[in-house]
Amino acid sequence: MKVLWLHYYKQWIIVGGSKPATNLTVKYYGVSGSSLQLLTARPIQFSGYLISWKFYHVPDSMSCDSYAAIWREETNSNNTIQYRLVNQSETLLTPGSQSGVYNTPIQDRVVRVKQGDFVSIHVDRGPRTDCKNRVSFRNNVGEDPMATVYHFISHPVPPVLPTDGSEVMSSAKRGVAIQAYVEGKSIVEFRIP
Image 1: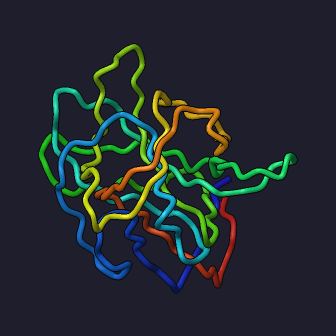
Image 2: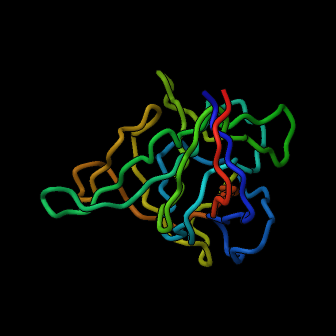
């Protein structure tokens, strides 16, 4: 059974770079590394439904399958902060063979995004150690927001990540050329067989 949502409110969320949230530019910065990068300093500002990902890609012989996902901060039973992967939000990004901006729609599932959630990018390294992410980014530029970086984690990512230092993690400034397209405030909901 397929779920169809009709909406009247749409917004792009910019999750990287110094551009304001209303700017639609996605640009080439450089080839990204293989770490799981949580863009925690740019939370999504409203609730809605994830429709698609828009990102800048430059072909590179060292690129591996790359993913974007939505995460949520929560407090666990030990009263410590952790990050939880939002159900079914992990999406394989599908660029073409040329450099440029690409769009990967969310299909066959409904992903509910809440205000305060944030975006991540990561790769499927498999047995390789030299993978790079297909999403363009820039590293440690003064005007970019901070990100939480988990090293040595690739696809499939664990559904929950601790923030207590038990994983190999660090903080770094990241300008990531990716946008989450979120559509919200549903006014009509109906199901079709």
